[in-house]
Image: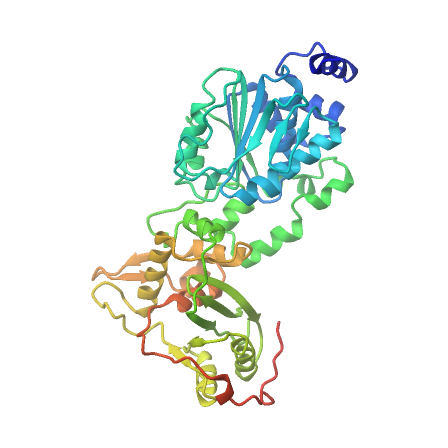
Length: 479
């Protein structure tokens, strides 16, 4: 029996035999996969059916990749045999392979759909016809998707805010006929991207927004109770409201599902922060620690470690005496072979930590952010000069930060700058940020210290054998 005959019989058994090419995807999901889509997911599926281009700006954990996988499976299953094709891309290979195509594999298995979905992120029918693949071409490759010649082409741009302009151009080139569709879906992190442009009024795209407060755990929309733990949790939103502040660009994007206002006074653009989180640079032997010291209250003491351009938080502490903080810093320093400097914010309570580390012989540097800048004509103080250098490092792609540290990303994205009457760069103060409802940028400040330029002669690689191993004076209590 031919593949065409098998496909015809299968369609008859599930009620699709006489369905038009653009069969209702909501009904299909229920009948074919046994899935009940919630309201916003239904809106997305119907929009792809009815519109050539659909853009979805969504909050965090709203099931973006899930609904994209359902639409991909529906597309292949309901179109004529071998005449449809699904292409997906995302900013990184990991997002293509481990997220969307893992979801597509799950939908394929659940529905016993035709052909095979391979671990190579390819969908092939039993006769060998390829009907879909996931790819991450080079960012500058406008020809990355050439060679697809089908009547029904569906392109999915997952995490669309991070997809470079050249790939959007490549997508347009393979979706020129009326039966093709594009679905761009992702967090609206940066309005100054192609995703931001297509989400604007008058773009010609069908645009759907999903806020955290639209999701079933907030609206009590009836869904299977087994699905609720997979969607956005109200406690998570409450925590981010407290930790990021409602005025934070991160909160606007990840919670409200809206593009934040990125003005000319934004120090580091969201797109640059996202790129640094997705980047994978090689560490070097330039080993250093940085510490932003807090004592009591809601602020945190943050310890970060850098190996050349690669920076990661290694500790956070709260509500502890400076002696405890010193002990915690020493415990981290002992794990770093070839440590060159420990950069400590010596303003206020940090001065005690500087003095204690210095007394014990550690290569500590007292970082006085309020002191004069090296370039006094251009910068108000050292803090402005150091943060501007950090901004340039982001622009040059010479920094690799933790992709899972959303608090750091939120703080970096909240920083603003202005010019004094003398034309000097001045970074918004912590007090000014608090007036905007934002928390203290402890992690952003620590990253700034970590990459601040110092005279090469400052600090020295320590010899562990020369240091006193007795830490009995310091009680280390991670928070």
